[in-house]
Amino acid sequence: MESYLLQSSVTLAGFYLLFRLLIIRENNQQMKRFMGLFIAIFCVCFLVFPTPQLGSSQNLPLVMQGAIESASAIQSTLSYATEEKVSPWIIIYTAGVCVFSIRFLVGIFGILQIYANSEVSKRWGFVLVETEASISPFSFFNCLFIKKGDAKKSALDPIILHEQYHRDQLHSVDAMLLEILTILFWFNPFIWLLQRDIKASHEFLADDYVIRIKGFDKLAYQNLLFEERTGISFMSANYLSNQTSLKQRFNMMEKRKTHSKASFLRAGIVLCTMVLVTFMTSFSIPSPFRDNMPDIKLFTSTGEIDEKKGISKTTDKIYLRMIPEKDSKFKAYRLSQVKVTFVSDGVGLWTMEGKDVFDFGVKLSEVEGKCALVFEVKEYMTQNKKNQVEKVKLEKPFYLNATVY
View 1: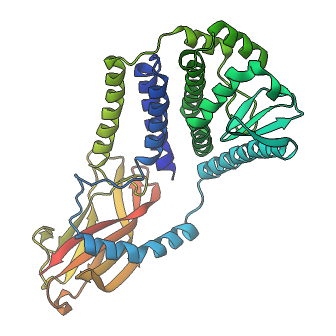
View 2: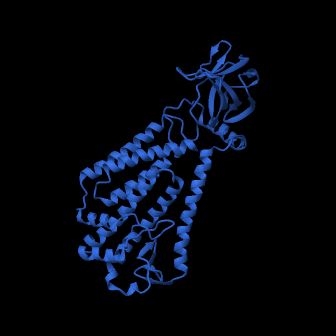
View 3: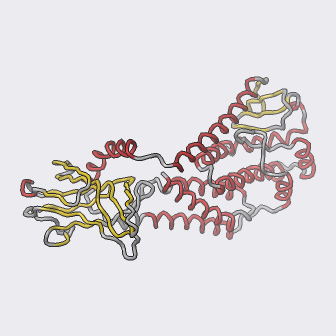
């Protein structure tokens, strides 16, 4: 879990900086909106979605591997949950998720409370909610919230168009998605910055629609915004808050909308970087579901086993050894949880499991026909130069396999 949160956060930081460098200065607000959303979703999901392991050393047939992994998944999960102590970082993270989830629910409850205590009707394609509270107009999905009596003011027509654009472009969906992501990654400042930039694009797009598409006078519209302080999108815990200042919006109204080839080229660079990151992760074991893969080799009394060639049935004893890396601070490794399964046609024939295991005395001669011998390593021990011993439990078992002939 910690590995996933860390890697996703670092990836998000990198892509946000790329977003600020290449995209944010463009006046193509729709592109900024979708690129921002795509970056947020990509950084959260690219570690979870399965990708072909191009550089994986696993040669176990998929049918056999699936049989072994599915058989041990429940057992491994239960053993990890009962044996491992909960990390203090997970406790802090969970507490933060709870706090921001409550903040989110308070915001939803505030909107529902206004809805329940107000006059509700249908107008302008909205569910019109007229409240006694002194609020600026804002929309949430298909609901338009305004102060009672303001619906009769013809001067509010540009504001209604502004909120219709928010509704038609599904900006509330964006806001809800971003709220969920900020709950899950509340500790990462870059998700908050990305949320701010995307919501700013929402306002810039709606303002541009009113002025350039519908033809309202820019100065009159700006004066109306001063009076009403509108264009407020949903935000949890305080639905009336908005981080996009009127000064920013007025400045953006003065800029010319661009659809230059250069802007799409910059977006293409970001997308190509995403493809490259995904491609690079395909050369490793998919994190966050595994720790760093240990370097474990199979040996017999005559030397290292060639996994491609396989193991002879005349072999009496098989050894598992961890090979330390050069310049490693550890001087010793010890396998402590290993499970051995004989597999034939995807079905486990029989299994043995033990702790503090260095070698296995196996009777391969009893196995009929050709099969696979699968070693499932769950944890190992390390000892550094100061003789300090540390237990390393893999988040997902590491497999070694060899054909028995």
